[in-house]
Amino acid sequence: MVSRKLSLLLSVSLLAIPVFAQQQDPSKPKPRVIVLGVNGMELDIIRPLLLKGQMPNLSRVIENGAYGKLRTVSAPNCPRVYSTLFTSTNPEEHGVTGFIVGGITANTNMLKEEPVWSMLSKSGITVGLANVPATFPVMPVNGYMISGMLTRGKNCEDGVLCAPKLSEVMGGDAVYPKSLQAELLKNVGDFYIDCERMPAAGDLKGHETELIDKWLGKVQVIREQQTKLFDYLLTTHPTEFTFLAQSCEDRTGHWLYPITPFNVGYNPSINNVRQDAFPNQYVAFDKVLGSILKHVDENTYLIIFSDHGIKPLREFEEKDPHAHMDHEKTTPVIAKHDFADGDDVPGSFFAMGPGIKHDLRLMGLGVSVYDVAPTVLHIYGIEPPKQMRGRVLTEIFERADNKAAAKQ
Ligand SMILES: [Zn+2]
Image 1: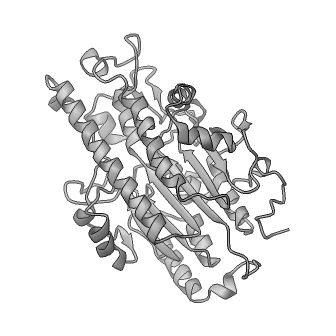
Image 2: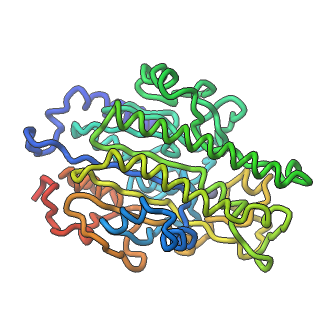
Image 3: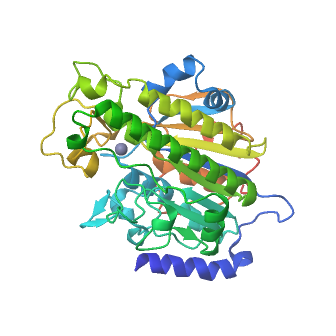
């Protein structure tokens, strides 16, 4: 119901953009912002890679911008945190409290608070989203939207942690506008919308090396398809605000985190096989980032974030209350992120762009997932609405009244 109201508001406002547009100088080009979400990016894993020079593109972003830990919510998982990030309201307020809400897979019809792309659309800013978790079914925007994690499809009827191809989507639209779907199938191919589901413990037994390698191979296929998709969208459908996301890193970490024999859940037949598999995900991610950086000029803001980190299990939790279902039910996980205290698994935040300080390290947990949407609105000179709990990250800008922002 609420989402219908939001959609209605949005479609009405799309017809009346000049009325809703903020006090921006129409002769000046609007700021360009690219937000890139990397699910579960863990600083403990990427810091050594940065030191070894294995993530040159992320190093470049750090040198030219601000970075630090990103405070997340309690018991963080993707739909819960992404919905918090894009509405800047808490899970109880926006309604997407986890993978499953009231017995139903989280979806955009549950969203009770307005997401940032809807606000931007109303202000006449063009927006594009691809593979962002918890954006299925897609909503009308002033641009395009391609759903991500929790998209339902063939062999993925529940929509949880599986990889339907674009042509296999069921139970709602994965692409807005509809006409974009045929164009993508023609020019990008029938790509996987989300990362692969992990193999079950029973299947792994006795075939560990073979199945691990097969799974990692599929992950790389999905990543290459995503890279092609992002590059195609940024080239042929450039938007002022673009939000892209990746999800395979997190899943790799859950069962292939490089742990040692004293860690809970250690199983040498799985955990000794490809100890570099998880770090290698970030080396591969860095290449995706390199492809995106080709579309980032000195007037573009780039924000990279992870919704949470991931840490080795600390104890067996037999009555696990969280809903990271397939990880827990079928795959022998050795790392997780939905600890009751979200401060145990902070995400990460990186930002660079015009007026953003260089080589700024953000200490402590002063930056939170609630702050990303207000900061994006600020860049466009839009006052964050009252319901938003986050703040504008003024400390990352050279000037608090950052000249790119139209207000003040
Ligand atoms: Zn996860």
